[in-house]
Length: 350
Image (cartoon, rainbow, N blue to C red; front, side):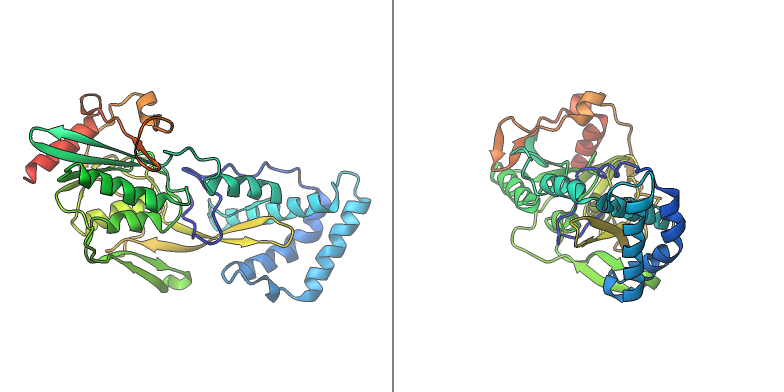
C-alpha cells in the first residue's frame, strides 16, 4: 500500500488502488519518445520539478504526439496518446528501479480515486471500530483500525479512544490486522496516543538523507495501561509505522503474523491535463533506523489466525455506533486465537 502524504489527497484506499488498465502502446510512439522522454522523466523524478525539462524537448514531444495522433493507423486521439505515453514511461521507469508503487492515473481514474479517498463514499463507521471486552473485573479497550484512507480518520480514532476511556478501559488491544495503510500521518497519530516520548519514524530521501523526524508528544490524553497490538501479513505502510513504533519503543507487544513490509512513501504531482503522477520519493525508517521494505515487522508473539475468511474480512460499517464515525466492534476471543493470546499477554502485565 502506498504511504502517501496528506496534500494532495492520495488515491490509495485500504490496499493499493488498481493500476490503470494497460493501454495498447503504439510501437511508433515508443520508438519516437521512449529514449528522450524516459531520460527526462528520470532526471526529474526526485525533484518533481517538471519545468527543468528543456522547453525544446517538451515542444518536440508535443509535435511528435500530434503527428502520431494524426498519421498513425492505430493511434487514439492526442489526449489518449498522452495517457498511453505517460503510463508507458512510468511503468518502464518503475520496472527499471524495482519500484512497485510508482504509476500514472488518467484524469478520470484520479478523479474517481480522489472521491474514494476523500471519504465521500465512505460509510459512517468505516475505518474505526471499538468495543469493551470484560475479563473478570478488568475492562479491555478494543480498537480496530481497518483503513487509514478516510479524511477524518484521526478524529475518529480520537473519539474511539475517548469513548473507551469513558467506559473504564484500563488495558488495550489495537487491532491493525488487514490495515493496508493510507495517509502517512495516521500511523504516527495512532501510536502517539500511547506514547509520551521517542522518535516514531524518520523520513529518508535520496542518499539516505534524513529530512523529517516525527517524535511523540506528551499529552494529558495519553492512554495508560498495558497494550497489545494485533498484526498480520496485510498490515502495511502507515499501519506498520504505528506497529513498529509501539514495539521498538517498548510500549506494546505485537501479536499475530509478520507484517507486509511496505516502507516507501509516495509523492503526488497533478499534471495540467488532470492526470496524476505517483512517484516513490522517500523511505521511512523505524525508531531504531530499520528499513522494513520487503521484510516486514516480526511480532513478539507469533500466533496463527484461526478466524474464518468471513470473520477476517468483516468490517462493521452500518451497524450501531459508539461514537460519531466509530462502529461497534464485535470481537470474539473464543474464535480468534490471536485476540485471545493478546488478552492473555495483558493479564501477564498486571
